Length: 291
Length: 298
Image 1 (cartoon, each protein chain N blue to C red):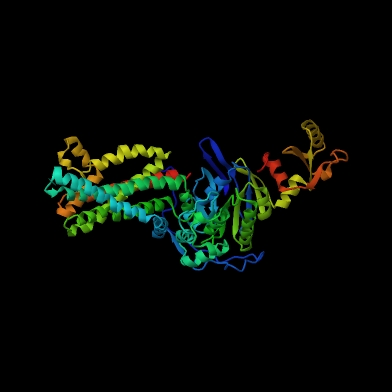
Image 2 (cartoon, each protein chain N blue to C red):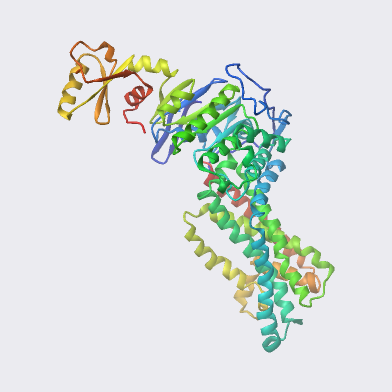
């Protein structure tokens, strides 16, 4: 995508976005709600059409050749849009047909195996648990063996156990060489799954790199979190910033980044020192607390 | 019409890639790494029959979960109408209309009633629910299907379904003593064409509506008058001149006449009626595609 702009009335959802996803990489598009991640996904499938800028997906110019591009990519939506009265295998068979797969039963079997739903193939979708339905959405996006997979907030609103299950499924896909673009506002998700992370806010990408590199570049090695009365924290923040350190709010505390470089005596002894994280980078760059 | 540039109308050939693995991780042994049967070249073209069939297969899969209720009511309803209107009114008050026993007059006219209620309403509500509540169209349009194929498939499916169910009142009327005629074999086709027009109308309405309550205006001001001034229950010839002229623009009236003529003898003007219904269906189809494109593509 090059210099892509997309507005909805007075709102600019995507503002001069440049993004390329190298083949075989899992790229995490990390940003707060409203950053323009879902609009970016819709632009890539041709379900939204950019005002300006150019978009190429798997060699196909969009929006002109959107259908050809869609034939080679799989989409796992944020919202569950399965046909609930229909069985698992019928849902998958319909999409295998929409993707013009020649051997529909074999494609359905394969997708069921990937999502570990083979034993529930004859169940109606409304009989499945929430986690199974998310796996089913993943299976549907994979039924035609796509080269590129778009995952829009794949684990939003799920229990920790189910998230972990899905993460391991997505990790399997990385192992198969599928190129993945995953939008998320969960830092942990990006940290665990993404080879590279692009931080998006207000419709454009403000930082990009491997998670460890981003942390080293923006947050340093170590972060110290300090709890205390607001007045004391404000004073400490001012002293730390005078010493050239970056500070961000962290709920009731403040987080002093690069604390390994803090002058002796600056940080109180009760400060909690920990390894710098992608969350530090994210909040620093987007200026907001992530969920 | 849509302000957006639309997808290519031309054909593009593309292949599905050979399997790629970067060797970073081993795929789990439970599943083969490649999709069987997806290696051949496939074509993307405008109004691809494969896309249309795919979307219709989704409708069929869903219909299989509720066909019993639909069939039950579509058979029972004309029976009830014929018993009350046809036999009740027919035996005591009306007798014959236009030289036909009243039960047969109503029974043949009811094909049109069945068609509009099994096409316009399901199209309106179904389209709205699939778009706003089930997000079905988001899923379909993420596959290699465009809005034109989606709308066409849904219109054709409703047309086929309504063509079949619309014929039921005629069969019921035969059961009540109407003599079968060879022309009746064309009734499913007439019903199909009319149902496609009403399906496209319903899809257009759903694409333009912001709230489902707005359908009340359409049913009260649109559907009900069409169905009452179609000549189903009483002949148009008894109406004031203004309404008689208006009835000539009512597609349901033409369907009523076509079905009656299929049973009692065709007239030369029936060709004009068919041409009118076909033209209407084509115009409303294009309108539905345009309005849905505007609604579904940002």
